[in-house]
Image 1 (spheres, rainbow, N blue to C red):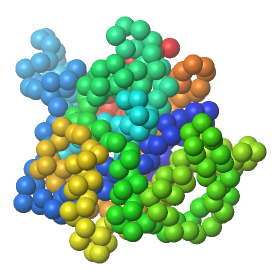
Image 2 (image 1 turned 135 degrees about the horizontal axis):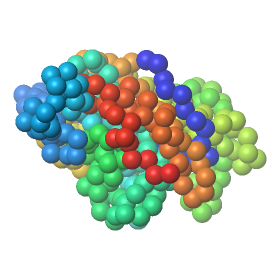
Image 3 (image 1 turned 180 degrees about the horizontal axis):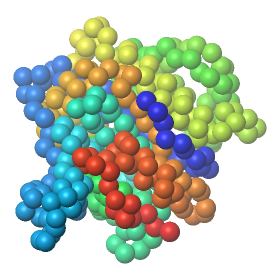
Length: 334
């Protein structure tokens, strides 16, 4: 799948790959356990820009061509869902990881876009870092903020306690993974030490957390481009875990997966919805999953999103409507 060009940023969400990994693997295994309750989710029709009855909502006096053109901007694609995935693990109620996931079951792809926590947003009429929305109003306000900023509805939300990632990796017996660079980093304030040589290694849950968190070594060496290199490592780890989790031997551990899900995940998706999404993810296969980060530049204290690049990414991967949204639907603060 072609990738939208991304700008290098100085900072980004540190654990987005773990969140995406946990959610989609759990969706898949939940399907195997709850297949009798398969039920596709409902698309949101009460959000700004999402119209219950398109024809009844069009202005009067339009020509047939004008009405058809406008109607296409508000009709939802079939079997297309947007899900906001957020992860918490800082012990202070903060959401350091936010990913807007598009599930296109009609065209067989899943695309996740990471939203850096320092992204500038307008919240309650004031410029704030987008992470402030969760801290002040939970998932509801965060979903409203993301929806308003990108001009598309957020159908569902998933909140993940990222401590579940370690439990998940341990449950599947660890993962064989190629570590792309020598890792030698210490952070006494976080009680964090990451020391791995480059090469293939079998990682347990605690070790996996360290590998996907790594940005650079104590002397500043490492990937050469901290965020881009780390994102590539997280993507590769996601694929490795997905392949291992979906083996026959691990699908026999359904009770353990369900316990992890109940302990570490909160969502407004029903069990039947999760089962249906899991079935779709299994049918698509891991190669159908891709992800990137909202394009922007770091200028203290915010990451400023790039209007044109974000619009192109939204229209290509996240757009739930029959036709591309209008540029003015984006609400990126200057």
